[in-house]
Image (cartoon, rainbow, N blue to C red; front, side):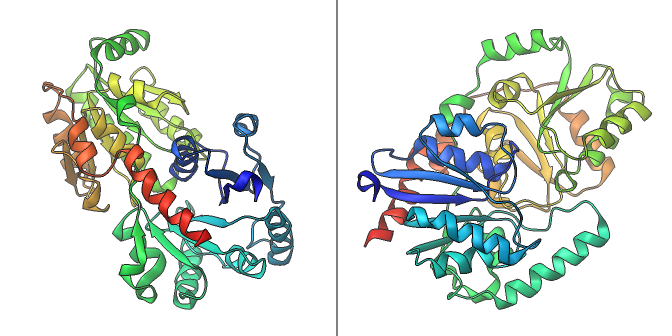
Length: 373
């Protein structure tokens, strides 16, 4: 093994700022580099590839997804595994096949770790989503303790969705979507600087962080904001993220004539600064494993409104309110927070809930270390 380090291959990561990719890169940032080596495999071109390479990691490209060409995928994945990995860490939103698991088993990888990351199928088209959900359920029925060696989830709901009853709960480790708390601590100077830059110093800023995808339910949020801004002329909607539905969301904003009241900030590297600038965090997502964005928003001391469809495990401070996806409820709740509140630091609450990455990464290190035992 290279320098005696434990070698871990993370698959897949994507060319997004989404939760799975962000978590994988965060794990790498905080894990002990003297003992562990991360490499990454992907089926999409990564704009940030050079940054990964500069950090001493390899990026492996696979020419197709497993469901597109199983034989070709397995051949290429097996070739990657010739690099002698101790661990294959598979970040899995929903089941499509077990090709990666089978290839790792054939290659003799000691630890095949399946990490459950979501609670439904994130596909925009209704027919395709139903088809993929059926495939997921069929795969889940076939999944067993023989398919992989280790099982992990970001929440109990995510564990139920991916593993079903086949895997005993005592064998599934819950690894929190933890963060570097110090980066998110409420900072009034940062808040004022960015609000000035965005020209919203005297506005009521309702914010959201998320890929513009079916799962995140931006259309509902824009519909709600249309009603909010009719009642509060100082209201502004700040959207952080991009995605395949961005053009559709922009068109919706234009149809409502709200171009001057909705800020599309795009995918940014300093989400923590934008959270400081917000007055309220609105997250009407349809489903989640356990959303990084809500943990980060709470860490920034923000009052948060979120969908009641996601796990209550994300309620790690007193600043979160779960709402049914009913427009009138959301409009009223958003308007209710318009008069402001005293924003306080919640670092200790976040830490005591188990969401400090410096502590949580130790759990992952212990699992990886067991691949050598």
